[in-house]
Image 1 (cartoon, helix red, strand yellow):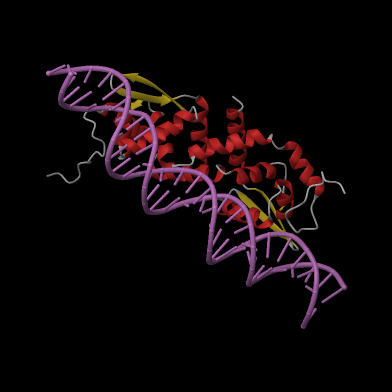
Image 2: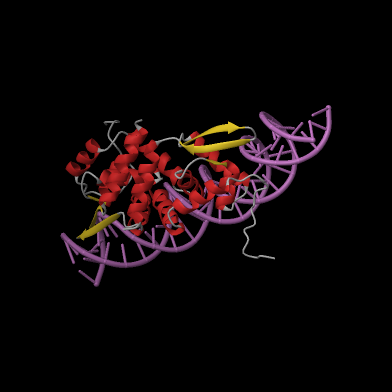
Length: 120
Length: 120
DNA sequence: ATTACATTTGAATAGTTGTTCAACTATTTA
DNA sequence: TAAATAGTTGAACAACTATTCAAATGTAAT
């Protein structure tokens, strides 16, 4: 018995092995896809995409974002932490204020492509 | 008393009104951002992004996808429903089989941009 | 030092989401 | 018509996530 054989979880008998092999070869490597999913997960939240979109116009302090989105400072700060951890934003401190800005030109491209898509 | 006045949820006194106004003017409209967030939410799942990536190589039946991702038919079918509802995939039936394929060239562009991003 | 204020953080909670399991369609074949 | 098979669907459960609240930082002004 060949223990390296994949045990298919589906009960299908008919699979198109050539098509499957083609897909397997052409797909990006596992790690890349996982990272991409993580990236999209960050974009896939209404608050965060509003923050990113706002920062596209220029840097803002946490208070500005809070006022702009009409959300509590705490909620905004929590989301900013996630954006920081994903390296999508950077920040600089000036006195008591913290100014955030976009960290990566990819962000703007991805945003632009998405808004283009949703506008058909 | 002006009831149209926004009640800021943050306790900040210092906001940069000009920066806020600039952001407000330049941001896409609310509906667009929400739709974009919904789109990214769909991309932001490991299973779904694997499916989309696999379909980039060509159409596959549900059983193929199930075998390729080593997941149950049911789990795959549930995710395919979400992809269908988002108009990201289309399908054609042939006998008992259902073949899925990508529905939109934007999908491929967004995927490509994301993989480019995660590879620094 | 003390106060004031912008921001962060941790815990708690409510809501969302992905997978599984079992039952159900729909199509083909015998 | 009956059996077999590819796929779908709904309910249930576990895992995750966004917001709130309260408390804690850190910086500037008094």
